[in-house]
Amino acid sequence: MPYQCYYPLDVQIRASSDRSLLVGFGEEISPQAHRAVRRLTAALEGARGISNLHPAFASVLVEFDPRLHSHAEIESLVRLSLDAPEEELPASRLVEIPVRYGGADGPDLDDVARHHDLTPRRVVELHSSAEYVVSFVGFSTCFPYLAGLPAELATPRLAAPRRHVAAGSVAIAGSQAGVYPLASPGGWRVIGRTALRLFDPAGEPPPLLRMGDQVRFVPIEEGEC
Amino acid sequence: MLNRIRVLEAGAQTTVQDLGRFGWAHFGVSASGAADPLALRAGNLLVGNAENAAALEMTLVGGAFEFENDALIALAGSDFGAGLPLWTPLEVKAGGVIRCGPTHSGARCYLCVRGGLAVPRVMGSASTHMATGVGGRALRTGDVLPVGDTEVRQPRRAAGPPPFPRSGALRVTRGPQAEWFGEELYRRAWTVSEESNRMGLRLLGEAIPSPAGHMLTEGVTLGAVQVPPGGQPIILFVEHQTTGGYPKPANVISADFWRLGQLRPRERTAFDSVTIEQALAALRAVEEWLYSL
Image 1 (cartoon, helix red, strand yellow):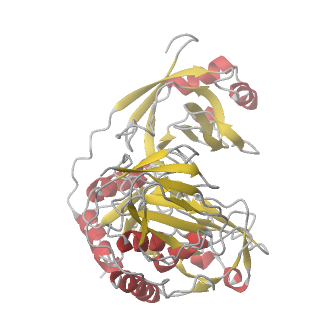
Image 2 (tube, one colour):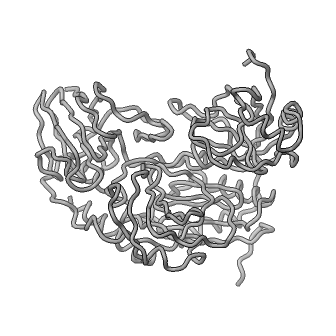
Image 3 (cartoon, one colour):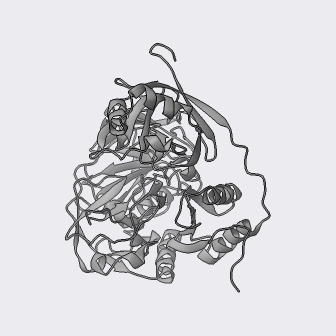
């Protein structure tokens, strides 16, 4: 019998390793896929036997302890969650991120402006007037993948990644926006920087941004904080 | 009596590790933890600790450690030239020094102490995530580490090394994009690059042809073999990123994770394809040996 669920999407479940299943909701970035990813992640968070959840644009990697559970058991758990009646998702919050744009804080602002034949001021206007949603948090510690970058600002990555991107760097890549929570190497175009700590490695959670949160960037002048 | 360990020499890269920080991948935080979990677990069991107790992980060149008071320790993993038997509970007298040097075999040696290291836990784990600083940093000369009192059972007798070979092909199951690739991964010999670290083991060899498919960034897990456009595979290691966009033909099996932690730069390796059932049977053999300690 064909598998049925409440999603208007194909669901593919396959083994990713001897201790994980990859649950896919199609090959496109879409609001439907994002909603499915959020729902499954919320349903499985803290579930017994699950050691880690890796949500992404249209998939969730579910990692488990193979000494305690089989792939079949975890697949049943996933399907049970998918079949459960639609429940309210955790409320999404609005987080405002103060940004100093340009200069040493945003070394790529001028290049991005030139790339689109805009003034740097217009780039800042566009970037800070949009509303973003955290598609997922991943890659490296607490890096938020933000959907909602105005199409006029879509810019390719740097040809060669930087060895050092400062913590708090506000950056764009393709149609994505993001913020580097910690200093790291990176190939995104850095247009500004925030003093807001998305994550404190010495501190305790929760990190600032969660999947599904809404984000707005607020330009500030030098000297403000 | 409270005991402390003074770091006289830190070694090349010595960190505090337990079995890792789980439950935070959806915030982009990978588990980290011991690169050779088999050695950490065995060392802890031998001194009567819970297998997840925090211990010292030494990499390639070990350090020298002075004990303020009497202690019971075990060295597990590779022989770092301490002149002491491995896989054996050993008594150290107050003021005694355990001095390790360059490795004589694999990449890592663990120094486990009865009671565990009493370092703060961050997000539920004492393990150090080097790349982000979560859980601390690599040890430096002069650091002092408190020893805890969380032993859970009597120490064991000498165990002898695990009955599993360190060398030979790494066993892998099929990865999510296995059908995009041919047999090149399995036919070629690979050399571990000097650029390898706890985030990833970079392999050098005749490049694997780039597959044509397009994929979205998706979750990735420990042991995933990813192939960037250059065709040189990277095995994602304990500090791996939590999501990635490169296709993955294979994933190292759980029973062989410990062998990843013992691979040295410039060492040769290869891949051998197994089924999930074979992978789980191999994992059972590892667990049975640990339970026999």
